[in-house]
Length: 134
Image 1 (tube, helix red, strand yellow):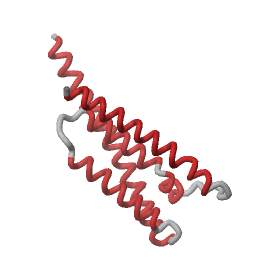
Image 2 (tube, one colour; image 1 turned 45 degrees about the vertical axis):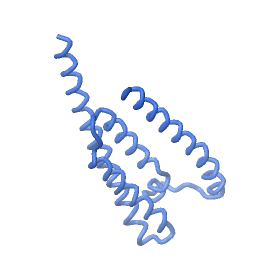
Image 3 (cartoon, helix red, strand yellow; image 1 turned 30 degrees about the horizontal axis):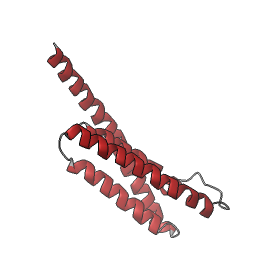
């Protein structure tokens, strides 16, 4: 039952992500049609791609755990709060520079840390499965 419920939640999450993307993407292109994209860290933070990659690594790592991780929740909460503040102050460069840089730093360190820990946990599960099969 837990596996089926978990599968339902994961599929529901994926459907929600694609629905959000389908709603957001046309609005993004409509608003930014006349603006040329810039290769700056402020625009990179505003795209939401680093935050999305952080969320994917948190989901992958949380899927291996049998309990809710408060540390990963605070990773997502802190980087989401900095992203919100960066978007809110986007046209005020002095404030936006700090919030965008902090958001990108939290996302980058979170992604690296989560990928490293995910590899370790996956190897531990594989060793336990091999030991149980032997």
